[in-house]
Image (cartoon, helix red, strand yellow):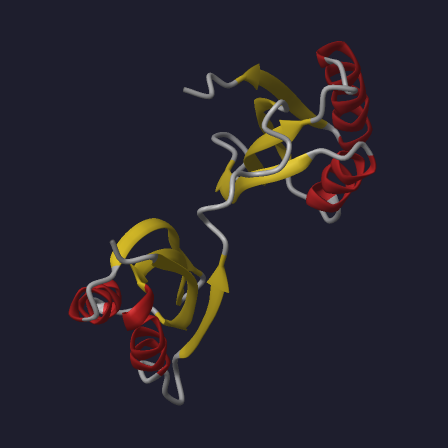
Length: 180
């Protein structure tokens, strides 16, 4: 049985149709498998990060083929990953953190600084702006999945995030996540 190698591939370029197709075609041509990804249009650009598995004997060829997708408008990086290693802190609790409020500088920094200070890992995060219905003022939205160590209680987390939300003038909601 062939061992798998895992690669993290990042790509950024001006957004246009066909970007994902080019990447997947290259992966498939080297017997690779698309495992996990986050892809988005940010401003006028495409940004993506993909976890790919590939038979170990195809890894170097796939890496070179992916790097050849780069040009003057496209940036591609490839790095080995250890996706087959269980994540540290398996006993940690998953929560979904939602935040909404008037947009202003420093929201993500303030929340992420608190999370880091308590050893809380951000597993995933998405942010976006919308316009308030009546005033058309920019509203900031953040949704994050966080992994909380056992020494941080739900009450402590709720209390501190509510205090941060009050100081920032945003609403904060915390929900448990079923890890299954």
